[in-house]
Image (cartoon, rainbow, N blue to C red; front, side):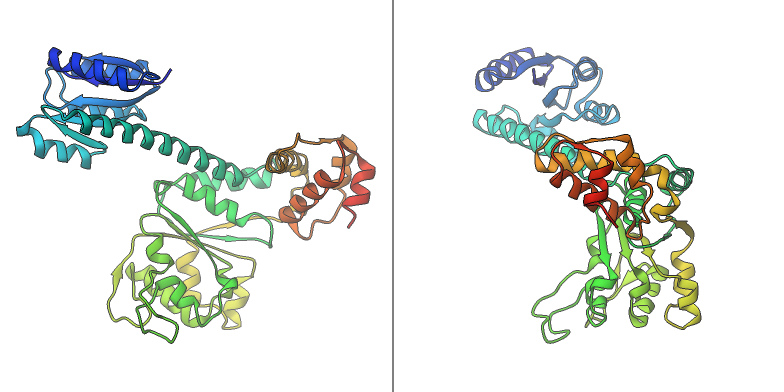
Length: 388
């Protein structure tokens, strides 16, 4: 059962709050504590406390310390601080530290109940956001146990906690974007945004506006100011996919942004500070592109502090059974169906093919088999529906 915790050292106020909250929120179990130490013990004992009404001035441990302790144990409760008239500055400070709201003493009951109701709604939204983030993260899992994949995972573990730029190479469909997402998720920037830019999909005349933004009137269709991907990724990670397709003029501006940690929107003469970690990926041989004067060598060295090469699926055929099982679960759940049964002979048959389209192609084949086959996928079904 979900719980609400009231932390208040004045017994009369505590009793009133307990009675009102219990009446208004009958589905929640109400706990109370008369000092901060007891409150922290209850938070450790009850992870399903959703909201904490916490007085600021208390013996043994004050409300600010209770809030800090809850954050240290990573408790997900939403805090509403209760402050005396002389504690308003401190109450505002607690909101800066992570509290959701504060109520002045003596508490206005309508204001109090509204704050608790909103805090419970926020708790639900936060929980749903975390669930969705886990679902998204699951979609970017790196599946397999091959030596090649293990080596990539070890590199990610080493480089992710740093601020080093990473250049990810490999053929189309091999999973370069998965590497980028894993680096972001395992980094200190994981709570910030991860913004992706497919450089190959944006016309060369628009790439600078897409990356750096533009001001109103910078060109014919610029009817208002627009922030670019660098600013959208502020505090997080910017993933430049297919960087080898970027125009030389855009490359020069990206190089400057990396060197100076500043960008200048198209049509503006004002620089803006940016705090982003840049990851890049390409299916091209950038060293050959440099020789042909199609890619800047100085940008290559800026981007490629760490190089991670993702091999094609033909170099890790032993991962196919695990990948099939993963896609089987994922795609079946999307369609609302039970996963299909893949016989051993079917998996062996899939390992015989030349996977020029790599993991992306394998996923398409698995989806086709899930749609076309009733329940069990055998060797014959693979030959019929996944023939190359």
